[in-house]
Image (cartoon, rainbow over all chains, first blue to last red; front, side, top):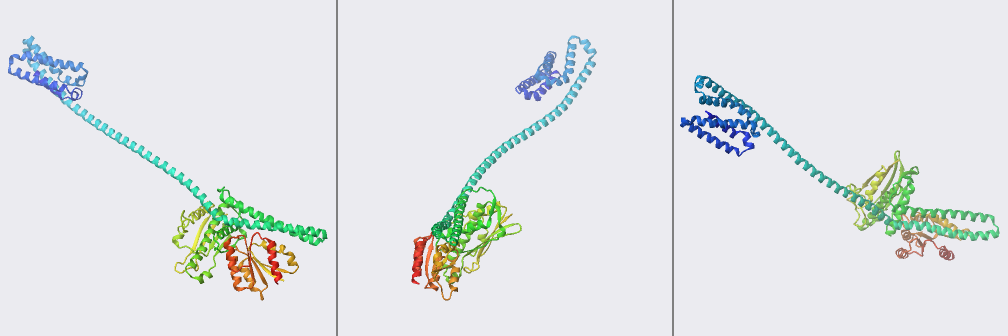
Length: 460
Length: 127
């Protein structure tokens, strides 16, 4: 029976989780011991004489296991196992000891010994069953915990991966944002450059007009000065003669001429100032501006500019200024640019129409055609209106839809920047106003009844 | 009495001419008329029966009808009337066009009144 106990013990030890995990090499040792115990059991059964000797070896082995379970750290989880078969070991040792030392005593109490042995076995089996149950429960717990651990690890891994992804995306977006910001910055710089060059281009168109507009007042200054000089000579003569009435007449003439000199001097001055203002970047400061005066000034500049560039060009200008418009708070050079742009376009449209009529050989229509540009102002309830109308080529709807887009132009390459109307639109928008267009264009027949009208509305 | 017409879109031209030729006007040798556009000039010429104006001085650069267009029209309708141009632009293109269309003289601005007076003197003497 001792060896059966040992076999159970070794088997248990060999298959126990503790051994598997902590000392896998011991499994083979336990297996060898198991085989040895089996062999000894066979020997014990075969040769009855060796029984008592071998059973002492078995006792020694079991005692050693008990001792080891109590003292070796590695075996501490096996303590409950020891509880299970410790009573049986004691019973066997005591039995064998009694058989050996006091056979009489043993025989007298053999029934007692057998009963003890039976109880010890029951104890062992019961302990094993309980143990097994506990172990299974524990195992279940352990597997659960391991699963949870695994899950946690997986989610942790997922989280890490996500974090890396987020970091990558963030870096990507940041780089994109920086690139976009740089592009925006470049575009803004380009825009201001374009605005400036558009301004200079329109100034270039104006140069001839400005020259003419300065030439005229300067001529008057020269002529009236010369006239006054002559009048002063006459005055000297009259003083000698003493004709007071004549003297008074001459003096009043001189006075009148001086006024004219001052007027024309100031006119030239205003034109030069206007030109300088036009070429400078906008101060953006709104100031009370006489809209009628501003409109008239730019209309003349535009007309003379075009005239000087193209000698064959001519058109009638008809103005209808509402005196009630008066002064309005605007950035004068900006509104001036808008008017200039619109008037330039109007003159271009009438010149183009005339050219088309002549080209198509419709000489009768061409002779009858009177290129005209109308510029009018009007005070409304909520603000002022400036209208620029021409009886030029007119526009089909397809063109009308696009005219306020930057870089859109119907002029041949090199003649227009395509920015004039787009900038004008922006300027009026900044003033809180509206720039609208209406146009009539008859595609079928050449010429008659085509027109375009731009309407500037500025609230005030 | 010699009547001349001056055409210019600048209104102060009238004051200038009136003072410059004050003596001639006062002495009754000269009568001055003014028009501020080509069409106004033609209307004025049309309204005279028989025609009184013998000489037209016209600016070239005017809105509406240009001086050169006016020149052609006057020469077609009133061939007897002399026309001279007065322009700030004394370039050959304008000059040639004016002369080809039958202009008598071509004056540049600022107006040299001495030569203008001589020209007008010639007309007065012819009369």
